[in-house]
Amino acid sequence: MSNEYIMNLEWYTLVGLVQQGYQIASGETANSPYPEGSIKMQLPYFQALGLDLTSCFLGTLNVSIHPYTFELVQPTYTFPQVQWNINSPAEDFSFSPCRVSYQNQTYSGWIYYPHPETKPAHFQDPSTLEIIAPFIPNIAYGVTIALDINLKEVRLNRC
Image (cartoon, rainbow, N blue to C red; front, top):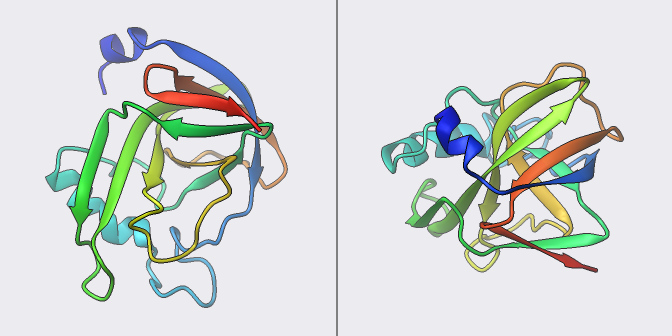
């Protein structure tokens, strides 16, 4: 993503709370159906469709934005019917750029949104954003972060 593109976005900053997810995306849970993680399995499909996430950590950062919920209204990328796993139905995915700031560092990433209507399991709370970003040192469950989102792409609603 070019710096020019980033500078032209209408950013809005939220404070979010990092929380534990299902650990399916990273494959770190003991009972994961995808021992290497679903993100690692999905990356080649996203890359073939034009989104290169190879510089990102192979998992998601789950961020509660309560008292808000969100909806992606005009995401940068939407990939319908991605058949990334032969044992599951195809899924729709959308992505919107974001920035995560933690300990005086800012990381460019993506809001990762597997559409619930096509997702077979592991649904997120509507106040939880899943973020794909580079590895962020020292980040932990329970810390607060600043999260910049693009209001042209993401609509916030109060709970």
